[in-house]
Amino acid sequence: MPITVNLDVMLAKRKVRLNDLSKAVDVTAQNLSVLKTGKARAIRFSTLEAICDYLDCQPGDILEYLPDEES
Image (cartoon, rainbow, N blue to C red; front, side, top):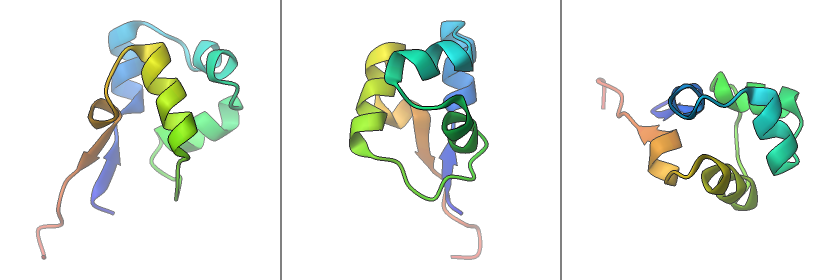
C-alpha cells in the first residue's frame, strides 16, 4: 500500500507513549496499535484531528504517500 503511517515516529519525537495518546484521544490502545503498524484500512478525520492536536503536528507528519515503484 502506498500510504505509510508514521505514528510511531511522531510518538518518539514527542516522547509520548501509545497508552497516553490512547487516553488523550479516546481511542483504544489496540486500535492505535493497528494504525501504528500500518494495518488499518481507514481512519476517521475526527481521530486524525485529535491525534494531530495532541501531538501538535500535521496530518502529513503521520500519513505519507509513497508511490509503488511499479506504477
